[in-house]
Every structure is written in C-alpha cells, then in structure tokens.
Length: 355
Image (cartoon, rainbow, N blue to C red):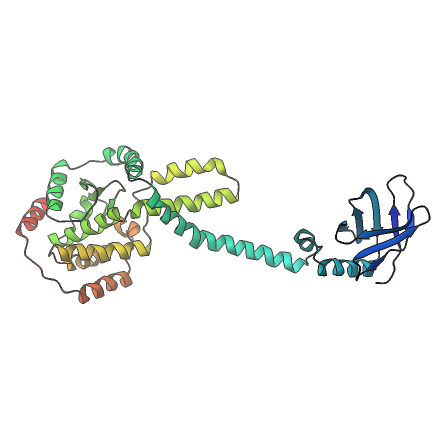
C-alpha cells in the first residue's frame, strides 16, 4: 500500500508526530517511524479503530494511550479493505458505514416484518397459547361479563328452562356443561361465552319458524364453546394490543386492554376460519343427531332477508354471514349422506318456546 501522511500521539506528551504509515498486507502489520521512538509496528489483528468524520483513529492494546490519526481517504479505504478481507472488521463497523439506501431499506424491512408478525405470527402464537390455559380461566373471564351484563338484562326464566330442555335432546359432544339462557330483548342476536353459557335473545328466537333452525343455532354456538373460539379470539385481540403496546412502550395500558376485552365478549367478532369451523362441525353434530342440517341454511337466509338499510342483526355483526359462507355450508351438506328422524319432542318444546 502507498505510504500516507498521518499524526501520531505517543500518549506521554501532547506533541503530535508527523509519520508516514505503511501497511504490509503480506505480513499483516502497519508500520511507521518517529524520531523519538524509531520504528513502530502494530499487528492488524490487534489494532482497534474508529472511523468518523473522514478520520481513522487507530490504537493498539499494548500502548493504550497512543493514538494514530489518518485523514487520507484513499489510504483509509485501502486499509479498511485489507482489514475486512482478513476478518478484522466487525459487524458494528460495517453497519456504521452502510449507505443511506441501506438504512432506508432496512427500516422498511423491519416495518414489514413487524406488520407481518402482527398479522400472522401474533394471532398464530396467541391461538396456540390457548392450549396452555386451563379451562378454569374460561369461567373466570366469563363471570365478570355475566355479572355486569347478563344479570342486568331481563332473563326469561321460563323460556330459559324450556331452552335447556330443548338442548338436552341434542348431543352437542361437549366436554363441559352447557347452560342456555333466553334474554328478553329485541336484539336479533345470540352468543356463547367461553365458560359454556349460551345466550339467545328473544329478538332472534321469535324470528325462527322451525325447531331445525334453533337446533342449528345452538349447535353452532356449542362448537364455539367446544373449540374455545371465544378465548382464542380474545387472546388474538389481546396479543395484538400487547404487541403494539410493547412496541410503543405502553406497558401500563396492557391491564386496561385485558379488562376491556373481557367485557366485550358479546361483541367479539369471530374470524372467518372459526365461523367455517363452527358451521361445518355444527352440521356434523346435527347429522349425527339425525336432525336436518338445512335448518342452519334456513336460519341464515332468514337473517339475511331481515336486513335493511337501517339495521343489521347483531348476530351478523359477531357472526358475519356472507353468501360464500352460506354456499359453503350448502355444498358441504350436499356431499354428506345422512338420514333425518322426526323428533316430535324437540318440535313440541320449540312450539312452547314460541308461545
């Protein structure tokens, strides 16, 4: 390498010595001479350097107070190339000297990774974590909602008793007890809480015209409980909020987020995948109970026809009904072989519920 002009401070005085350092690539050393100290030779493998403001500062651990300052851009570039080739340039120094385009690209990549993580990774991890949560937690998060919301509404005890009698005639293949409640309200809605409480509003119950529709509705909600869809959606929402809170260092808001979501169980909107799973498994439940799975289709068609420009049934907000979803259920039912056995008991109880 060509010799360059540099300044050397020996660390024992403030005198600046003008020197002409030379790098021997073959021997892996940088050498220079001073009148006072003679020839000085530093191994490239041991030197420590900082490059800033177009100046390269070099130190050697054997002489911690000594400093060699080089300002020749060409010499600095060639020296850094040699150091890099020999593996003496760490990632930190490489990163410091990247171009603006690199930093812009890296920033955009990190943002993209954060977005993809929020959309795909966070929900996946959140759902998988549900298997680690004991079922007692389902009861815990549901209890506050029942106390604060359900008991403040007008529960129709007589129709609730009949609804539980109706449900007893169907095997929902549930692993936990299911309890069915009828709430006196004009809302066209029904929802399942994680602990097994299933609420049906009279506004929805009164729209039904056959017991097959009610059986389809209850089977759909029972699947949500069996598969812990409510808790999975709750954990997905919480994970998303927590992910954002941690990014913006808003750790104090996490507990408020948990409380808020626990009190929004009714309006929790299931994902399309959960709805498809609930539809398909509900149809399977009805088929195994020898009930008509087309009751689900009639109920959905009735809800869709009930919509107008002024009101959308609440059930369609938390259980989004789409033409594609309805056609999927219809196609699935069409591929199944099943037999329907008339069930006079369910029909009788349904007629009593309608009174």
